[in-house]
Image 1 (tube, protein in one colour):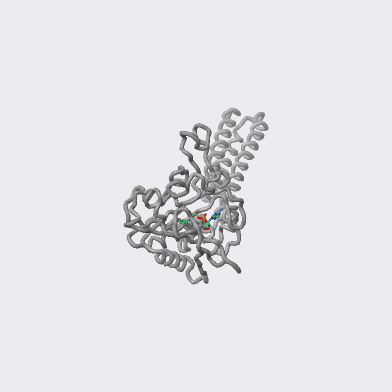
Image 2 (cartoon, rainbow, N blue to C red; image 1 turned 135 degrees about the vertical axis):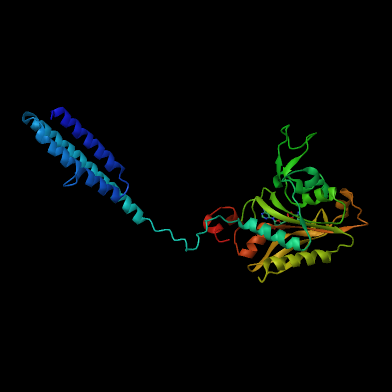
Length: 344
Ligand code: FA5
């Protein structure tokens, strides 16, 4: 046999063996490739090796060297295949078997902020007392935030130090033809919006953010939430107001030992007016303001004060949430410390 033919046969054998070992996908395929190529008796390598006898004597050393190279290539391919299958075996063994009988694992979801939870509870309780929740804008004009609420131009409640006025297109804060705009300082604005658009009877609540340039301390924050309530009908009395607020507190605080008290006070848009406190630590904490809707306000929205009367209240949502959960400092609600928030 000519040396060139022998070498071609060897090359063909080696590359077929390499391909077969590379494709072996499981131990059985690996074993059958071994038998085919390097089997002790009938392996194809053995057969090619026997063909070396017919190569010219002078060419045999070169043929022998090439035979050894081919053997090495085939052995290496077999070893690599073995290693590949061993490591995929280990990976499969490392994975725990899927057990369809185990209970499912719940995804780790976030949770609602305590203020969002409080607002939902308040809507629920007041809804059961027959109050419909309505929304109002956070950017308000002078009419809804002050004028219609019986707060005249010279009233100290309009002081720029107590309100977040917005610069208008002309760059002023409302002097001249531009309307005065501000971030609403109370949800009482919604009373005016509702009464201007709806004839009596009215029975609504409105919950949302309000803004005041107050210095933050344990019970004050520059942005906070209020729940506003308004009921206008024939013969509504102060006793109705007190009953509704007591029922609300009883329902919201449940079995907790929470007492509320009413103190005479003054608001330009209610007459008489009260402040509502709840007991807190060894004293009292102000919860909100309330009173009978002032006849001037009823008139400003086109209602007849001889026909209808009403009560209104505006309570601080944060303080009520703090009282229920024993939160000592309002700032904890807005620091966004996950360890704090996870408790609710
Ligand atoms: C008012 O805002 C009135 N609009 C309430 C009202 C409505 C009276 C309807 C009559 C009729 P006052 O400014 O007191 O009232 O605020 C009400 C409540 O908001 C306070 O009692 C307190 O609970 C809460 N509050 C006020 N300022 C802050 C603040 N900076 N941070 C947190 N809560 C506050």
